[in-house]
Every structure is written in C-alpha cells, then in structure tokens.
Image 1 (cartoon, rainbow, N blue to C red):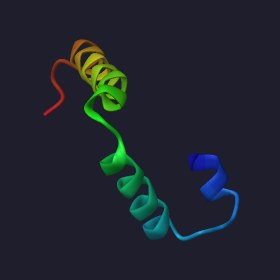
Image 2: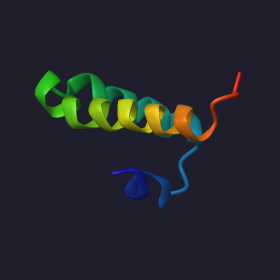
Image 3: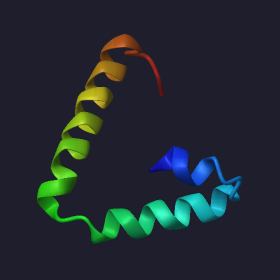
Length: 53
C-alpha cells in the first residue's frame, strides 16, 4: 500500500492521511498483528538501548 501511494509522488501529508483513513477502517482483528509487532519492536529497542531517554 505505502509503495503504491509513494510511487505516485504524493506529498507525505497525503500519504499519512490515506494510511490513517485505512487504519481507522480496519477491524480490531486486522490491527492486532501490527499492534503485537509494534510491542515486540518496542521491547527489542529497550533491550538494545537500555539508557535511551
């Protein structure tokens, strides 16, 4: 999805707007894998950089 929008040279504001609209249309079940991945990446980041912030 991102590449399709980006390849048309649309401004980043418009890309964010479209992706935000798509995210809001997704069900909680569709969002779950993305949320879980985000949480996992956050944990990995904290492990790699314990003194960050």
